Length: 220
Image (cartoon, rainbow, N blue to C red; front, side):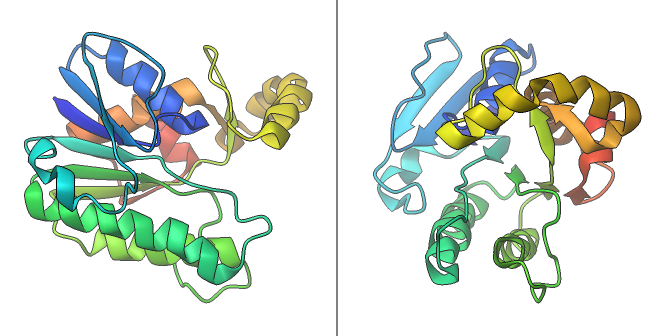
């Protein structure tokens, strides 16, 4: 299986990259982004582009892939809805429309978040924009499209958030992960499990297009 990975330097992307490189069924991982992942591996290729939402100049490099894991994302804190929509909806759909045209037999897996608003009308700005993005992706002519909605993610195997505030939050929350896993197992997952679950969805499918936390933890 050949896979594309957008957002390999983010926390979820790092976990997906690790699991993809370890997976015997994966023969190639091509990371697409503004900067290299910083890793080297015989199965890893890098495609550095100035704008991951505009792929016309590199289309020749993007054909023949079986799956795309789209893990790009930014925090909505301090952003207007218009700006957040540009870097969430517009960028994602720009890339996805190109890939759907080039590889309609591809499985597309998009990372959103717990609480995403499918109605696109709720009070939370980020949830509305993510919901609109999910809905648009599921209308594209991919073989399959899955919207992963993780909540609390415990970083594993050296995976780190790019955001300093989040890194501190994970350090502070580390003692709580075990308690949450014991009392509310479907409220927490790990970067390792998210990566593995995304690979399982690409290979064998998932129970439903909207993949919630319980589904993520069950995909093995």
